[in-house]
Length: 125
Image 1 (tube, rainbow, N blue to C red):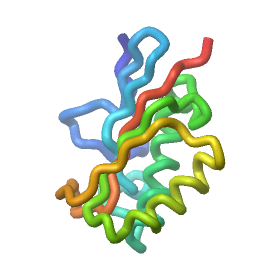
Image 2: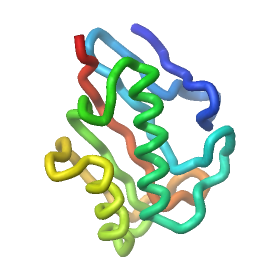
Image 3: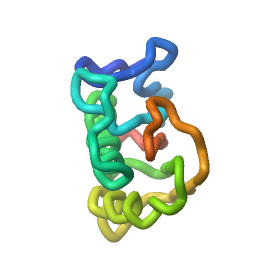
């Protein structure tokens, strides 16, 4: 098992960005924080989703994978009124063949974020 911590990406000291166990990568819940900062990108659910997925892509690259290797995503949205905005940004990242997903709404998120995303990916050989 390998714990992944990516230099330049925000995280609380209570968790790693990801854990690689065999050929499975478990990416911790990620927010739309700016590089080297605990500050959220401004603009709400759409920009936060884009930044969050960019941060996840960085974590996956450090783990030996990419967004193409993601098999399951959990999306948490503080307000389901922002679902369409989040979903549009999500589809920009994953295209017309996205991974399996659940969206949970009405949750309180760290840093008062609009969106938090975690995922599971398959590490290519």
